Image (cartoon, rainbow, N blue to C red; front, side):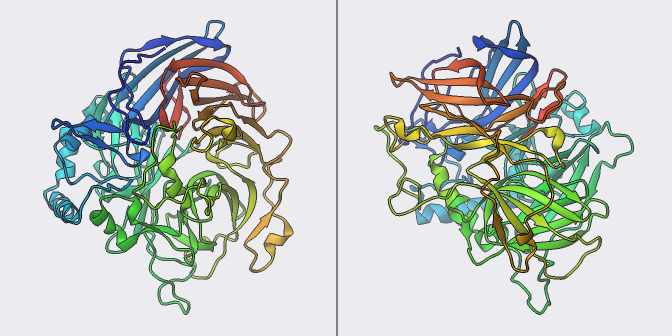
Length: 600
């Protein structure tokens, strides 16, 4: 069990600081881990929520997403004598120092209720001054922990031979932490020690703007990594690019796609010309064998994201417009051109699942929400409340606990984009979708079926035991589920072919005979990571890894790594890490050779 020394401070909202475990420890394993499970699970999340200052005051983060970054590393050895070795490290100590010295250029996801109008004006001035002086670039050169990078983690990041040599990284072994900003952090793949902060512009100067997707896409067949940079001002522009894994013979280092600047379904100057594109919050996107698809959600940064300068946070800057259609911009991987834009109902989504194309048609699965209320509810992320703690009162929360509101669960939608043109086409196009199931997010599937039809999807969902918890009116619990989407198919119901049809609901979808849940009482599960059995022949032959935060009868906390049988979602083994709760967002698993197997 990991060290359980004093946790420093607890925020008014019940978020507790965690103590890092920088010296590897062996953790007791109960149960059996399959012999073929050998490798390392990395999890990235939040470890510091309160920062004591020299004057005796304490700075508390208002939103859990703003908790300072903490990495967790589990080295797993299956077989007759299973073993789990655990390490963790705080990786944003420079941000803590900036808080202590009252750095007014800090930007958070959630609001700061203590910031006055004068404080906002001062913050805008210092941020603009810092941009002119290049302070971000200077800080990244001086301190690899000067920014809070706490969302996703990518092994085998393609730095290229020159940067690998310059930064002392073994070929192909770069481990990089990412967020929704264009800021990346290189960490040691064994010690988790931060080594370098950089941007995509470090690799190519054209990609130096402010926003990027936390989740890249990787094509294991071609060795290409895809992402985009979003320029919000003066004109919203998505710059999509791909990096090639250095070991791929004949591959180009950087491929640049045509910038996305307009809705081709209603192009500028067209009879039904639309408003300019909005700078939406895009956390992830999709690729197929032949296309890149960028969602342009109806949830966007107001005033071309300049509102972030005023508010000092992302949350107050985001606006959902129910009258603004969702757009899907399609780029050809062959020509690099933006060939089409498809419109659909207004919506918002964090995470894409799988996507594939066949004969000029794209199918794309996304965990989708009908509006932006899930962001309001995110103030409760991973908070298992005790009655003595209070909820934040300084935000426009529309929680599902409220008496007069309801936050919808995620809908797993399968979007269909018909008749993809080979060259840019300025004609109206409509994306239709089928509802495959409800209440699933943080999706993972068999990585060998990426860009192919598939059947099983693993993700988080609401814990059905939540109401039985003694603090059930305040507690937020998540379970994990395996969703059976039915035999892989690429044909919608005939109703979807009707003109003007937006959605068809097949209630049998998502509840196939092999749908299963892992729903432990008084516990909350993290994103499930699916590992396929390398010798298996069936899609669900594998294991699922999840971190579980548990509250026991004596109110003691426990953090546990649980390994599930991916077929029936029953527990195979567990390793108790410590008497605390770890709030993690995403993770990745690498095999013994350090090769990414399941990557967020």
